[in-house]
Length: 170
Length: 261
Image (cartoon, rainbow over all chains, first blue to last red; front, side, top):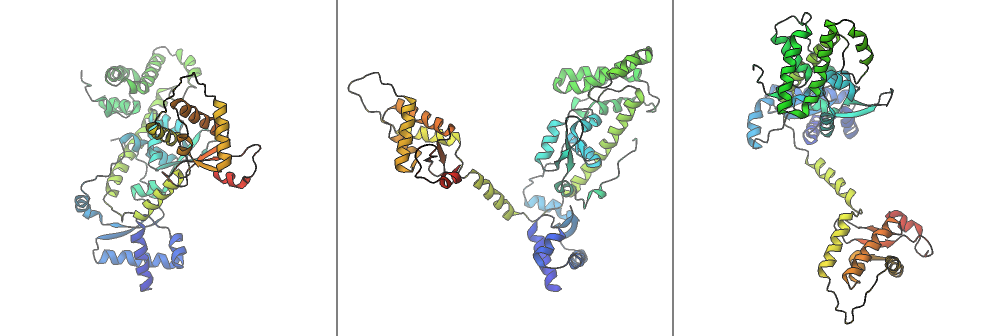
């Protein structure tokens, strides 16, 4: 299984994005169980030898990346091309969609109290949300839901890893 | 005035409302509309001054606050209020409902703040850049453009020929009329002989500026009528014109132009 483990390592490196078990299985012919075990072994080995790389389960797949503690150095390497984060308006809208999906534009606007059409366009552009059918009410409004890219953006394995809705009053 | 806050600090009417309630240091369930309605209006006035385009969102809430306030003073008004509450979802028939909505918004606002932190954390992970994918995507992109001729391509060809055009001097100047249908027929018969022609070849045959323009115009009409097709074998290649052979000329088999369109 040493060879297979190296093969998986190579795949995870080359992918640069989350790879699903299904895909790894199709490529390598290994069973999902074998892949899961090899992934865990590999992940633990990385940790034990304090590797500069890290393996995680993100967006329903396996993802290889650099260790977050080295971020400042990598930023220097890339010349401070800071990846722009989302605006507050986009983040609030995204939060509502994430917890109430599938949801229509009007339903989002009722919660935020402001128009969200432009924000929705932007989120769609970023592939963080997608249309998910239509609500069977008058006018059949479009329903929105989050995407796999959304999970990747926040480093979540799946939607169950979303933080619980904050109910506190500061 | 004490509300000299930058207007974009508040993400919306609920945000502002919550701020005012908190500022008043009253229990959320005890707060009276009258107390904050005035402050809210003061703030909206500021927004209108500096940022009129977003003021609309805040104004709806202002009117709601005033409506609720008047309901309090004249309880009978509430009956009328009930009927108009069916609007676009931003009218609230009672203070309780309004504050419930505000608290719900609040939940998502704080969650959004947590998600912002998660986003920041996630930005510390760097992946192997997916170069292969990008190239593939770019390739698909190009493919889409191949074979499609846009109006811009056509006009660019036209301009090129226009530049090279050396108008022949006419010895006798007679008012000459170039008929559009004549040119259309000319193009069709030219294509019938040649099967396909390059656009520039077609245009270069014209000797005067006006006949060139009419020819180009005739070509556009033929394309619109689906009599001819314009296409490219590859991106940025020469623009080819072929006859669609609708009508009498049938030596070109249908499959051929079927794949072109």
